Length: 176
Image (cartoon, rainbow, N blue to C red; front, side):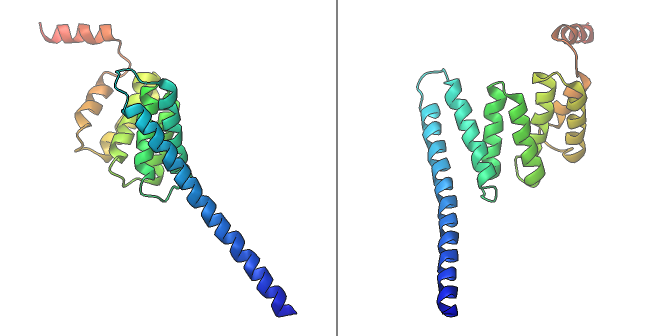
């Protein structure tokens, strides 16, 4: 009788574990299907206009995938794509969250230097938070002194918080 109950408990436990594995697989498949759908909708659009709602949905699906299936090799690239869309759809806080996640969870990813630079850029350009912009530009220069964006970071630091009028005035003074 004890063996019978142990076999039944083992079968129930195995069944519940396999159901959980199937749910994760289904979640991954559903998210990938949604991503493919919205990529197709957005990128096969022959007009020059982008449906903002569809772009935001795609960014959200990229983020969801990276959160749900964080160990997948696609996670950091999906986070970067989500951040890019969010940045261009005027959702700077969402973009920063995605970039920060890349920096914290995938620090050796090829997109990490760009994620750090773009974090500084968003603080500077979209949020006018010059304290954080300076902090992240300096961190970028410290961590990636030979990166393609190094010159941009140095120029951005030099001109942090200046209005376009001030920049034009400085440029005109230099060319006199």
